[in-house]
View 1 (cartoon, rainbow, N blue to C red):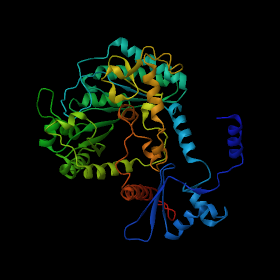
View 2 (view 1 turned 90 degrees about the horizontal axis):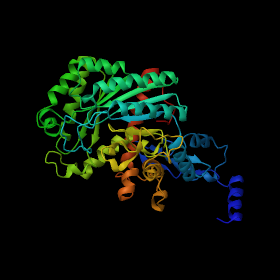
View 3 (view 1 turned 135 degrees about the horizontal axis):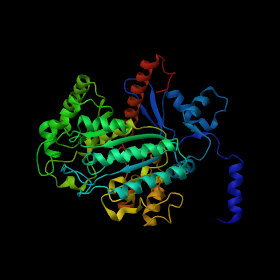
Length: 461
């Protein structure tokens, strides 16, 4: 850009050329059975109800005086702004790639697994993290804490099946907790496990190691679950997992997750009831959640895992994404944050923890990578920079002009690098998404009201 053009741009910014205008990231839907509309703002993560008259005033906001009574609400809700939101989104994303709110290390003590699930996106092999690699993980955590100076260390146990190596989990946890204490940092951990190997002794150990949440998948009722989550070599797993959830005293929350596909969706209601009954009977903190089986190529050829129809997927994923509604972080996932890494049992580092079974996606090693000099200490610097640069909002013109950009950010960075951007499925069904968010917000507001006996302010949801 010529120097005089750059100066003119700065002059325009300094002069405050962006007057108040309606946010480009507002989306509205009529509330059935009422004369009201609900609106969400995808950049700010706000939700509010408006009358038809208020919507008209919002459409004319650039002509309203700043002292108009409704202006305060429009601005507070983020529906009226006086700055370039696209530039703000880019800035938020760039800050999020390096902002050290916490250190997160995903650790796979083994890449082996005792299950043989047909939709699994990982290849498994028998392995155990050696003592040398464990030392490297501790060294990595030290470097990340020292370079970031944050006061929270988060550990995500993954695999493979992590409970095939409980001794490694216990040993590493004690060392990591000691490290966090020495650095004055809070320590938190959670785990993805199939739950089959859980015992009271292991549960107690995990509690002592500050694991506060487990994610355990139960795919449906007994027959359905056993068809898609059998033991490696064959054999049922349902009753063992259910018994563990019911009979053990679990010192952590368990998210019991159902991976939805065409063969098990009809059992969701019964499965939820079963989980709720077990929670009430046992006193364990069990939370039922649902996810959709979608990206795994294996699904296409697995006889027991038929994909959902487009209509089913749209409805379920709309509801799931609505649960996570909030301010845009400007970054798609942790793969784009340098303070979040995955390390497999061999000590290889990955930006995307779902790719840790494939060495070609490893950018470095736990032994040598240093966040103080992240490029030059990476074995494959291009893999490191590609994920960081593709985690923020896309440069594609069509996407940058889309009102959904703060939510999708061009979709998964790995997917974008491999095959290009893919539009979110509810883009052309905005009313359903907005109303799904509205229902989530009403539910949260009711829970808050019941807790503190305070009502909502008029019009806010």
